[in-house]
Length: 298
Image (cartoon, rainbow, N blue to C red):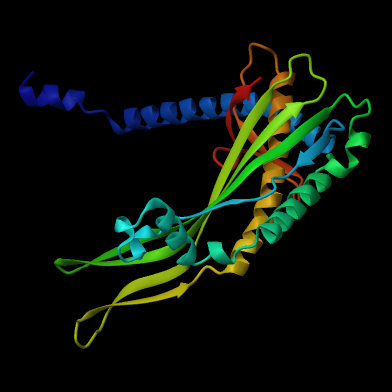
């Protein structure tokens, strides 16, 4: 047997390649079926909760004001030379949005969206004005305290690049951006061990941007064409309404997944975090579109 024949024997035949491929496909199928089988009981439990959210009562508190910050100091001439108090004043006067945003309108939009969606999801919602009714004997009662809302205005750098022939072209823009962050304290009423769970969510909005590099077919010059639809105060008010509804959905998902985890056998972990889509009346796993649980405290 020569060296060539040894090497030839080590090369899989077409039949062996098919067998390897079939075996690999079989392993993938088995893994998928095992994952699917573990997912089915969880999904069934999630739908059970969605169809009957356990008669949960919520007493909802909102903050009195909103923390608003402008972080565009780099746009103000001589900003670094100002005293701290003067910097705060300069940031406020030179803000594109913060000085024009009304706390009362933002809170009204947000809370209307939040409370309205909670009720559509099946929760029994009470406001501080009806606290006496809430405090009657209701086993599934929780206090939802929207402890803080914070809005941050800043500049978001956007870069675009495109290679043409042997040159890479770059274009940079500074977009207006806004973060809307919320912290919630959730606690059960009349629980043996009274604890507060802190939930958090943050969302960002930017100027709408469309742009691309183009080559002039006659001159071969590279140009950049773009369109910016700037974020407006009205857009931010609309965002508050939208996020109120979204956070209500997040809270429903939190209770839903707590129910699924509690209903599974102790030896069986919760494989997925589920989101309930109310308009479609369906549940599906999610990874990021949810509350962050920051912790629990007494």
